[in-house]
Length: 47
Image (cartoon, rainbow, N blue to C red; front, side, top):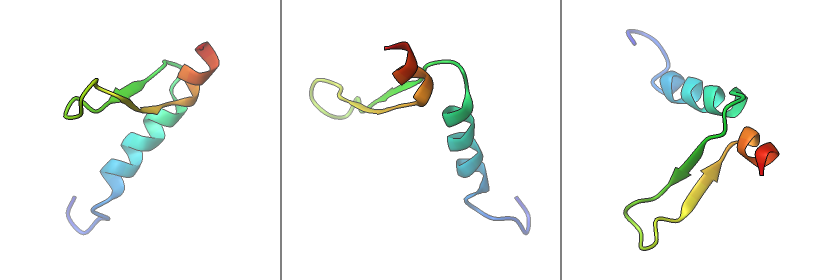
């Protein structure tokens, strides 16, 4: 983004994941057993 904040796209992505009604789970496939490293509030409400 020309002249914009370099972190803005990442911040928007985080905000979108946090506010969606769809459950989101992020895992780390680089680690053994593919551990869950993040779930959004929608996932927490569903489980």
